[in-house]
Length: 374
Ligand SMILES: *Cc1c(COP(=O)(O)O)cnc(C)c1O
Ligand code: SF4
Image 1 (cartoon, rainbow, N blue to C red):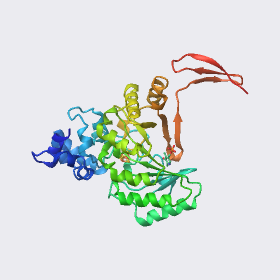
Image 2: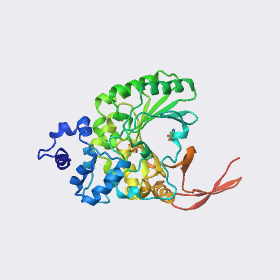
Image 3: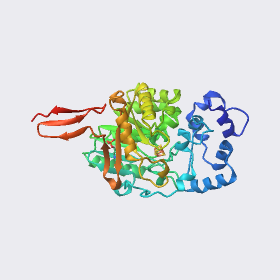
Image 4: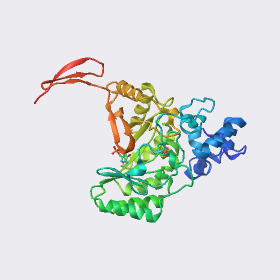
């Protein structure tokens, strides 16, 4: 797999230098596709299409690893991998109610790179770089301009804030993708956080297992495991992303004592059916990854074409709960605008609640009485 694409990427008739290079994450990063001319060759875009995409990607750049490209069916314009990573004319369309920063992360930032929205946990953005720029990304506004990683002074202020706020027991490293940084940088951050006694857990939000699984190698895992408890949240959206490589990436972490949870985004044409979501979540359990959240896609500029209704999310959860392992059913959440935070949504199983009894609806739809004790 990947040879054909590798050939075009390197613009040579030679296949990429064998499986050794393919499985080296540095090779994958050196050979990402991030300009339209390369894309035009791969997907046979005509001049007008290329011009359109050049304009769009000046606003919302793109980058795709050869590995992630290789999962795509190039001949299918509706391919679920393609919809997630290939820039599209749709991104220019205007939709009602979308904004650059609907969650008001800038306003909730107590320092550059530190969001303190909930009582006991904070989110740190370490970089704006990602191996693949997902077209549905909530932080699309951060892609333009230069690529950055937090500077030492910024990090020092972040550590100081966390040290002074004893209520912070959970630190979420996010981005961008924090695992795009070098092992040395990652270790420096983990070490500094572990030096703060009240920080109980560290979470890492990363899409590397899905789009650059080669990154989760023994070297990285041996760094991470030193600073446990570490919880990794990753981002699979479609069953076809569960491959030998991504399974091995997750297994390396899980078997080293680093639990991996998944946060999917509900995306039109990608995973917006009970069947696809069930397949995805059952597949995740088979590789020891726990489905944690299913996010309603945020109302972010440039993502409107991928959004679905809230009813769709509820219908999917209703079609899963009871019909498959409870472990496979994620929490469906809407992230509230303007910093209201995540709101969990459930299909209605509570028909009525009286002082002495409740009327409940079973997963099969039968309504029954349940005695309600004092
Ligand atoms: C999602 C999020 C968290 C973590 O929320 P959990 O429900 O604990 O997973 C923390 N801070 C911010 C700003 C978030 O958006
Ligand atoms: S990996 Fe995450 S932060 Fe990066 S582009 Fe995708 S959704 Fe956005």
